[in-house]
Length: 283
Image (tube, rainbow, N blue to C red; front, side):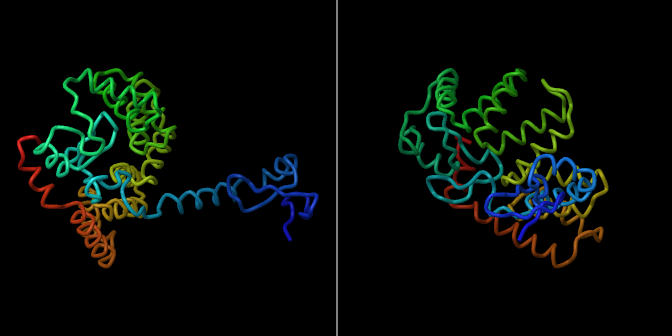
């Protein structure tokens, strides 16, 4: 049987206790009881909430937020230059599949839409997808506004993209809060968006979190982040894991496991078609 942490009231059929929304470790029969118990629960609540957050934060994602190429079904490379985003359907495909399609007919290999002839047409395509609440299109419009120096527009579209569930938009928002572009510098919001991106499988955000923890001399947490990102195939994080091993911050077994996982993740993104694309005149 469960009891209210403040007054001791037992949970029965006509009395339902509610969990503390932060730590989930205690229950209350009323808002008043929760307020009365707050002074003595505050410290333990904060500690348990941090532990719960870390359980989520340091969980190894099965794959990156990029997912697989919808044509060949192999994992998309972390390097964005090795993939192609089509504005017609906002599908990202690997350059291997895109290159093979170009040799046959210059149409989107996913939806078969003709390739746009101008930047204006590309932008119109993206805006149509934004109006349809496509998170990738919202992200892309944010990227385009940012590159043009329109930080207000970039912030607007990045925010929309995060609301629609786009992981990379969280990372880009964290950078804007770090640099104070369009918004005031805010470390708390920067870390929130960085962590959301890392939890969603973005290895670059994960690498940056490792660097942040390293700057705070929290090497154990930094190494955890780098190992997770290295396991996803991130080269920079693998270098940091190697450096940590050389400095005695990473055990031999952990280094060997990360190295194997890193090689496996990188190899999974390779194919003869992708190698051919790297040599193609289109890329």
